Image: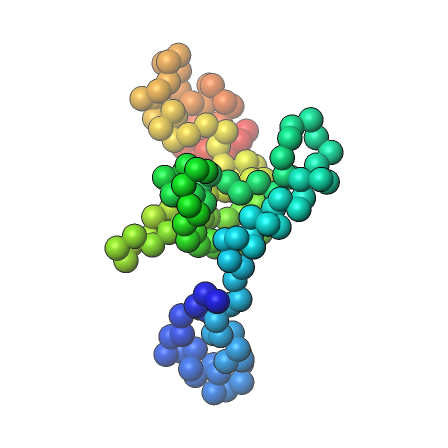
Length: 143
């Protein structure tokens, strides 16, 4: 079991009014590391691809120092959808982001990094508007 969401003062009001259930703050059942590894291995026989192994790979970020030879470490996640999530750990009360994904958001972001656009990595020396067809308004909108 892992802790549920943290309860705030305004949550108590919502529970008392009946807007939300107190069950929203109950601990969340979680699988052990051994169970996760066993489930992942059960999918190895279903792999239709040319590579050996399982199609439910336990990513290196789940291991201490990103080393699969070391033990698994507790990793937390916050997901908006299957392709928009962040994996993180708590270290000395601080959040350390291990991996963040935003697949499918390319249409909302420029196709290059802001660092590249600022010219520090711009090897051609051209303004980003000429490189990638942005309007010359500074808003990064595609023209």
